[in-house]
Image (cartoon, rainbow, N blue to C red; front, side, top):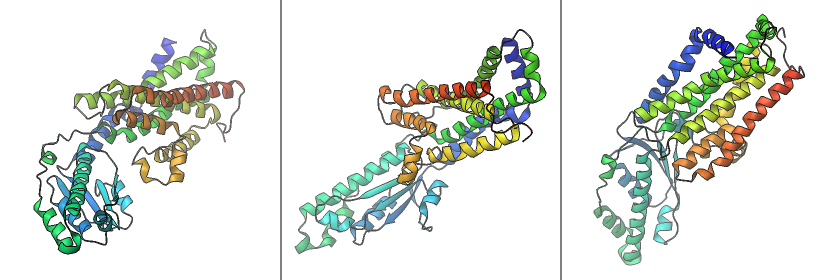
Amino acid sequence: MISIMKTVAKILLKRRSFFITTFVLPIILVFAFTALNNGNSTVKIAILNKDKGQLGKELENKLSQLDGVSKVEINNKDYIQDLIYHQYEMVITIDDNFTESILNDEKTQITYETISNSDLEYVIKDVLNNEVSAMARICNNVDIKSEGIDKVIKTFRDSQPQYEVLNKIDRKPNVTSSLGIIYFLLFISAAGSCGFLLEDERDGTKDRILMGKITERQYFAAQCIIFFIFTAIPSLEHYIVCKAFNYGFGFENTILLLVCSLLMSLLAVTFSIMMTSLIKNKSTFALVNSTFTIPIFMLSGAYWDFDMMSSGLQKIGNVLPIRWIIMSISNLQEGKRIESIIPMLSGVLALSILFLLLSIFFTRNKMVLIKQND
């Protein structure tokens, strides 16, 4: 068994594309996506002011004057696309009845849309909430009918607190900035590793090995172990880089991130092994594998804020195992207890075992969808 693992490892490590994808590319992507999300010293925001009154404009002006904030004009009606491509980091929408709601002491509506939740963005939300509360208090203390709304605006302008916290905040890179692409890379690495099974069958290597003292169970066990080890390397590199460069995890027990990533590695390997049991043509296997994984990652919210998708797409995304792991990490960053993520991680583990059992079932019963020569 050990000899099989050594042989497979030597063959895979000699392949330049596999070596780069598994060992080099993850580190490059971690730094690249970190630079993309944290390259500027200020946070770029876009304000969609739908308010028909004057207070919405005053709130917009106050936000534009904050240190550490750079206001970006919305030129595209499809602003979500610009948000995804980081033309700005946050979109703030002021409700069309904002002024009327403030004057009538009613609940106001300000919505926030963002791709990555940094500490600075949380501060901006707190600042806006404070400003809205200040407006409401001023309206309660001013006789609007006799003094007019200009009195409210003048009082609001005169109250100019200095939010120095925006300059002093420590903007650590967030571990989630590159997590989606790293997890996608796990599936690419797993497909590259598990494709070796198809080569063994095509070249007759598997049959020659089984003619010796190696049983079929030992053969597949050795292959699965070495495939998992290689697939887990990007997860390990991501964790080590984030720890070494003091990235912001958002929770104290950081080893849980590695646990989640290793479960994703296991899912990627077992999924690819199951696919190789059904598809014996290597090029078709690579095509089908990527055809499945790309939309699954998109629907899981691995690349953007899950809440930005429609409710229909969210329902689909919520049943996908990749989403379960992303939700587990999100729960930890929100301060929830470990018990909240156990059901989701258990589901990923159970699904991984199911994929492995299905691959054994398909192999023993010689159930093949696409043969080598098809």
